[in-house]
Length: 245
Image (cartoon, rainbow, N blue to C red; front, side, top):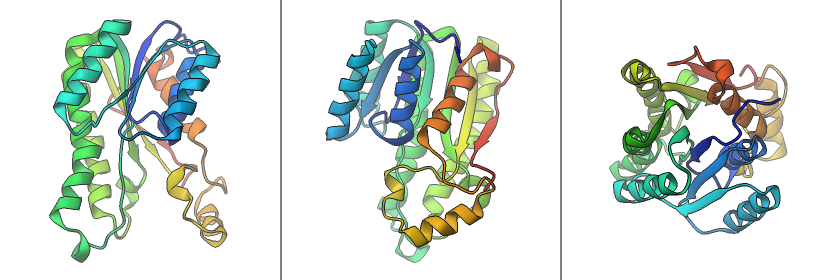
């Protein structure tokens, strides 16, 4: 399907692995110019660069910790100089840990909220001055924001806050022609699932209406839709991509 994103400039945070990587590659397949970032060096960064080169995609891959405003400023400025106005910002960078409340100290609470929520504030705020007239923002949140999850109150709180941020900014930025939406992903087969054994996966499959864990590419396809003209009258929405969990 052609989403008419050829020549558009997309910034994707956390693009070296999982949903972010699938999104980068899906956008590149559509002919978009890609600016993406990672927080730590890994083999994934190198293989992503190789894949994009093989596709002939214009790309910028940079290190950026979205919790640090200086690094975000540098990423957005560098991306703007390289590719011009930003047509799409995908806020994907995020972290998770599993700790019951009595063991959840203030430092870990803050780390998760800083990355999952404040990181989005940082990237959106910096991008305001370089957005194209009809830009789109897609924030990746999680289905657990609706359902809850034990031993992850900090993560659930951050993801629920992303939905509120999305709804507020759609009203604030809509008059400027900027759409802001979110995707609430369900159980997706990313690195986070590597520690789940066969029994655990079978239990998860029983919880999901379609009977299986999702693929990162399926979330990426939803990003393409929300970024495209097909979603021109959709803003402030949270699209569930969770297999009916």
